[in-house]
Image (tube, rainbow, N blue to C red; front, side, top):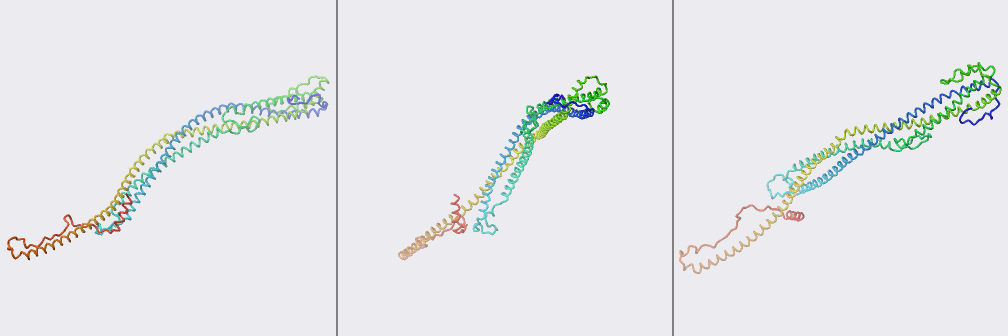
Length: 485
């Protein structure tokens, strides 16, 4: 047998067959072995397809690498844009929180002042007429406070709404970026791809240096060549079987009949079977039969080798298809990421504008809130001044009460002294009259008999008295004023 791996030699062969029946059985087995040509054809198809896959894989890998390089660069730029917009949102949130804390503090102070006005009862001695007002708060209009707070709340809600819109836009933009980034990162991650020996091996993504196809193709070509050589040895064995039968008595018809209906594409043996046998010597026939016997024992071994080769090639070709499918998937993912990037970049201008719009809206609302807060502070200061002035009014009333009391004491003491002087003057005038009145003419001084002068006191700049406020109320006011100082 001419098999490349055959180790059996002619000299080790069994004695040459003599019967036509034995030769026919060898011819039938040889004819069946020729069907292995289908394996050879299949091997050729696999090698050809693998060469095409090698070419396409180079192109696909180059295209994918180019796409991913551009996508990675654009992603970096877009991620920086998103980071800036996110920083704007975070900064706005911090400012918004600080404004709210300041606003809450101002509102708390104002509410505290209003509560103090509500709990400070009005002294009706100041306004005797009953008008239904019971506390200091009844003398002020709270509507201004409510209007200011409503305006602040409106601006705060508008700012919060603008911030929420920016956050939603940032989240949507981030999700799109993340989707594209995941596709790129998955493609760059090491993947398990088939090696040239059909084992799992890690290969870098989109790189021909990591491609198993060149080694697989070389292995396939070697196996295909061995299969072709094996098929050639089977063909030679078949021709030898036909020749041996032709040189055996009664074998001509058998050879003609058995060489018909060969596998498609296998045109061998017919010329030998139809042509008259060439004369050979007995020695030559004996040697031919010995070779034939030796080769017949190796037919099944050669077939097994061919089947093994085609089985290995099919397995390797499956690995090639897996690798190509992975490359196609990566290229498809890159195209998908590129289209997603195009869609994202088409919204980039609107995304950047959203950030700018938020900054303008927030600055506008922040200015309005600060103005309203200044008004609230002023209103709070006014109400606080009102409360403080009322306490000082009570203190002032207490002081005036004290001064009136002191003046009344002085007046009472002065009137007592004047009455004493008046009585003393009256007594002395009466004594003078008794001593000298009889001797003096009546008309010597008209005022000689007039009574002494008498004095009275009265207000000269108004008659309104200081309100009658109890000392306990005034003392509480004094403590409050001293506590505020």
